[in-house]
Image (tube, rainbow, N blue to C red):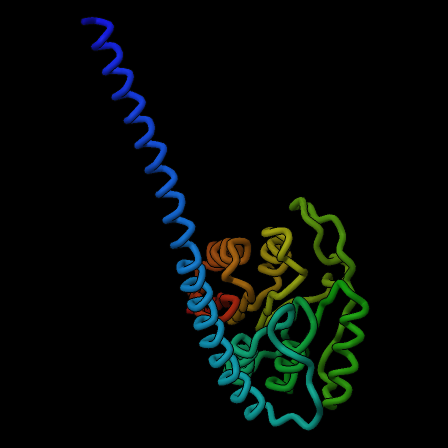
Length: 251
């Protein structure tokens, strides 16, 4: 009898194991069948989001070009360059606040927009790349812009532990009414731009406005909050721009 029971138990166990194995195979097949559909939905959503963002940026770009009323060509925006949404914000802030001195960390289209929108100001543009600084200089010349001081500041070890602009190039700067932080390159190091807090806060005027590009990234977002702590008389707002923009305004 015991031998018979053992045989029955073994057959039942084999059957259960077979069913488990069969269910696993079926589950794997179902997952493979469902994956393409999930991938298609994911791709479709990504394309819808990209199309929507492209349309938004085209709206901002059209407004930007209309308001600037430029007489010469300009380089491409977006990607590594500033996007139309943040450039339009810079234009609005520069026109409304009428700054006397602007510090632009990272030269390019932002330099042109700031200088053109605030012709009464002196714009100091800092770039670690001689190549890009040269391109910005040619861009400004083509548009007849003369109120910009472009300075090449190679990256040097900073006390914070990251490489930042050569401090000797910023030593004579003070009373900044508008600060735009879009450099040095920060895609590989989230704290690459953080030295701007220690080096620029004491150079700001009481009415200074601070604009931080790429605030959709954790590094720039953290930097914006650190700026807010250092400037208790300012309010911090995050704009839902393509790359994220943080704006600190005096209360």
